[in-house]
Image (tube, rainbow, N blue to C red):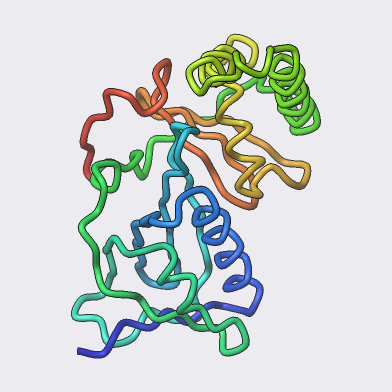
Length: 224
């Protein structure tokens, strides 16, 4: 069977998706992503290791994908293979063969019911919090004696810093760090949304979602 083909609305959509996939692969060469396409929209879900969030990147399609058996696409594939299949000049990507997805791939945030949470700091403040956290982590590691810089100690310091919440929102600084590391924390707009027990940081370049209070630990399965 011929592989499904995604036709991007313009070259920029393919380039932005490629940049997102490249960042995921940078953190995990074996990364998988779940694709959902319907009509002229594509959503790509991934989970960069250590950040404990789900990353969501969307892309506009010129037309529904070709060679599909149904009117929509829902499949988990290798992020690296999808990245290699993107032809930015032609504005297309061929969907790789499905893989056995990791547990998180069966658990996605709800599609609807999202409400804006008022009072979240603006994007400049959040970027400043991330910079300060990165600087603190580096400074505290440098203060350690060389033989004390064990993985366990670095992890302990990291957990302490990145688990701090942004104000009283329940959003850990780790989520904002993930958004920045994935290239989402750009531009002037940053919104915090909630739906049930889920929180979502949304920008024009992508979103990160997590369960309120405990990251992605204890995830439950919801229809996706």
